[in-house]
Image (cartoon, rainbow, N blue to C red; front, top):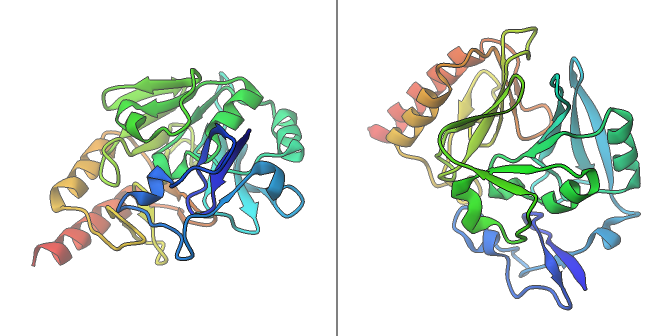
Length: 268
């Protein structure tokens, strides 16, 4: 029995004797099926051809990225708190070198994931480090490998560790969330946004989409809701879901002008 991983979105499925017929997440119109058809891999098959890189971000924060790029190519983050380190979002690949490096850094206290496209092999990570996974309850229909480690939370905010608060913004998915780190940016506050708030190539701006690969925009109301959700929290910096996707300063102002620009273009 093997835990098959979708090569397009990187989601790991429950152990089975044969690959699943299809990937639920890629069948959805926010994602897409591989142009060559549904394809699968396994952690054992990735070993020897993949490795994880730890990137210094700021203070004691590190990014984790798989090379060569796999699936969506996202970067996960290790973020400190007084009660331990949080893994924000996830990558599919996990090996002994990655485990050893995280343990050298003090291990994990919790895993939080922004939305289903970054579920990856979250159960594998949770079992390895014996920590809970916090997902918004709206994500439950998208969990393809159910497990008792998953703790579904409800409402709009949850402080999961001291100074680390999950904010449910909606938009990309109903439960799409960002993470507020109160001590980030030298105490000015930082948001980790995945692609709920997407840092774009012109890093003075961010953007918002229902589907990125299929270019389906969000409504003005959805964008306004995202902005309103994060507005009460101070932040000067945004880290998006990919390497070097950073709004380094004045991030709240960047969010405001980006939302205004976006809404102006979709409203005619």
